[in-house]
Amino acid sequence: MSNTFCRHLSNGFKIDVTWDNQLLWSPCCYYSKKVPLLDQAAFEKELARTSAATDWLPECRLCQQMEASNVGLQVSPRLASFNRITQDNLDAGVCANLEMSFDPKCNAACLSCGSYISDTWKKYEYRHGIKDIGIITNHGPEMTDQLIGAVALDHLEELYILGGEPFYSTSGNQMLRHLHQTHTDIGRIKLRYQTNGSIVPDDETKELWKGFKSVEISFSLDGIGRRFEYLRWPLKWHRVERTVANLLETTTATLSVNATISPLNVWYFQELEDWTRTTIPKNRLKWPDSPTRPNRCLGPLDLAFTPQTLRDDIQTRYGADHKLTKIFSNLEINTDYRRMFDYIEQHDPLRRLDWQKTFPDIIPYYKDIVK
Image (tube, rainbow, N blue to C red; front, side):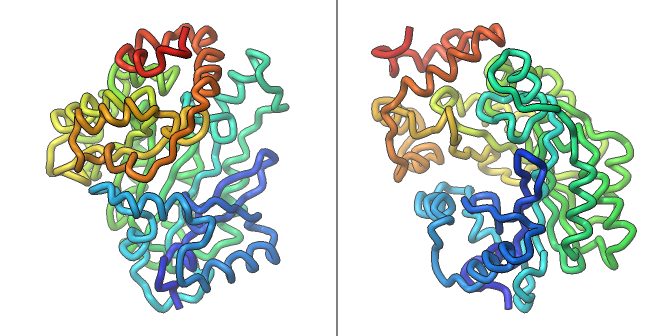
């Protein structure tokens, strides 16, 4: 029986990868524990634990925090699970929602990301002597075959293809071809993509979309113009505009925009939302009334590094009921700001960038520690 607290816990498959190219399973993207998918004993033990849960597990903290903040359109993964997995009589371990996030082929080295999921990041770290990660080899196709061999997809309702950058790699199309060849009714499957927007999907990809229930493409955009180019280096903003225009003209895909919100770009969120409203017609947006979804940045640019003064000014600027204000409502403060700026100042010279020129309104909030 599908879990009644969260259907991801019994029938969700989020597939990641280890540094040595081993597939990892977790029930969703926010669940903090991951176990080897092909280690049957470890997988079955964790699956039994998650499937039996009747309340929040410790590994669900981020989802629980999101739900508690009630960020407007930002429905928690737990609540979303009932729309993504509609079948209520599935056995535990039957895959109904699949997220592919194990192919590191990517054309970006986003400051909020890392070499764990981008081969461009790996090459950049190796070139500048930051980290020697060994031979850079793309095992995405091989791991896709492993996934296909290990997980039955007869009851699949939603396939979410991430990356790396999904339109830069072949793994997504490899899975779509498999579903066309083996699934009895692909018309029941929704397709979702998370893309950095720099690459227009090719004709083969668009052809493979035919027959699926729907296609949704979510753009990871943390700002517009030079702010996008800083945070999503070395990508160029004009390519994003080209991709959006192409999809609007040549497809019927639903579009959405997700922004990874860090202390650097939080002040400029309205710029991005205004661009979304004026660029994408309302009838093509997933969230037509509130078109841009903010998500907390984790890692070196963790949104928790936002000082109270900036949080207060965000509330004044956007209002108490705004999505950003609500994100801060139960978010701890990490005052080790130097850690964030050490990271930024390590990469700015290597990339010939300057965060102070790109995000000048943020400087006063860190005046005691920035150069």
